[in-house]
Image (cartoon, rainbow, N blue to C red; front, side, top):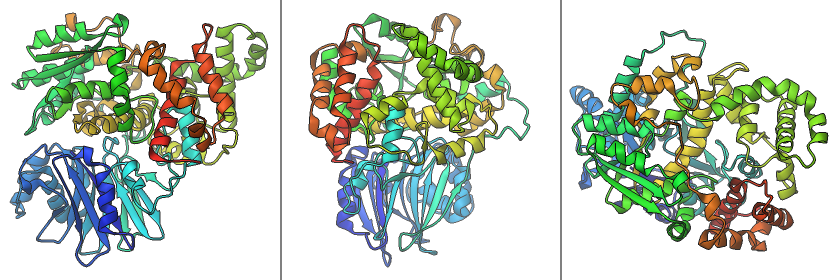
Length: 626
């Protein structure tokens, strides 16, 4: 696991690339290096977190001496040993035992088709000396990030936005579409970022760039399986074997590895398979003094059953307050989520882990969120809610529950008036952080662009191409939006901010394809309890260990905001007029949001306050302004 940076074209200066690399040293504390490609205006940099083959032979940028090609790489290709054997039989000679070199040699052997053979999480850039082009690639589900910026001086790319901001070519100006996207849902959505001149390469895509830094071609090399291709649904036995295989592949490591054990079914299944594989499993759980948020007792029962070396870390409001500055600094883009991931990652890293395995991705595949139950109802109700909205609005004065219904009806009305797909409109209404009217009050100068209901049009088109029709399978939307744009991005930045690699077996693309072959009515039945997944896991996780009800890993932030250092940090940030002014945000609207949250009769959710705090603190830290 690593971080990379680079430049192609007239802006390919080693000092600039070195400054970019220093900004992401946390991603690879074991080794950093910048290399200028001979006879080309191309400069590459890498920060290495050594996971496989800890010797110098695994350092990057890595050169293929036979072809003259170079690679910088972030991630893990889990089937690298199998690919290495195949490549060796074809005459390829290896100098290291890393998956990095396997990727480089695979490109030399198979060209761009090599990416279809990789199973894992990855983003990488290969300089092809024979055609004098850069090939930039991102994994299928979006576990590893890849950002780029094009200008008259060339092409810049990096694993993090903050690295690009350290170059001389980036104007630290906020992107209006990115800001609108953030305010609507609490995070930006690809291909946009919060910075005007920086874009995100979308998952499952690659691009080619010539020696001058000009984009030649972009391609989507993988999609979620389409509905139009009939396939035999996978059986529970087949899915169980896929999951076994996926977990086992992710246990290969030359450094200490453990499992995030939340007390839920997903992490219990990973713990069970890891124990079955003969590993001396370490498990980690974060607990709280607030008992209704604490799942650590359930996690300890699972750990005892499987005989793991278990660590429980209890976090108080005071402890979280001490961690908060570093947690916010770890965010590469602002997010109203993610600090929960920082806490469990810090606990694991403080206890000696370099690699952790997580249950991320299961809920999106098997209907593990409440919105899998709510959104079909909202979707079906779109028509009559739109008809009744004026009457509901009239009756809602002084009735909180009717006020909420009125807001939902109004949001659906606006979404459908804009021609947005009914499923996407219902999802965005259910998940919305700030409604349009609140955004207009908070950011009165913000004008609409290529954003519809918080989503870039390019993103909407991409989702619709994978799951055509008005009745989009919610798993497709959840995998592409909730998982890739929110959970995986937060996990990457928060874990790598602590120099920790997180692996997610449920995101294996072959497991995902097999699971999606099962009709959604069966696969995602009875949300959020996931009975179909329980059937898959029945032979490996005893029923007495199953949670009585589905619970997510959530911090008690709402309570922590009531006092102490957490409250003070938020109030200090949101009461500073300079930060709000620099983003074009209304000081009075922000003050009303704060006051509204702290009133005893408040209907303002904590997430709105926290989302605004994350946005302003990130922009101040990185000197990004309107």
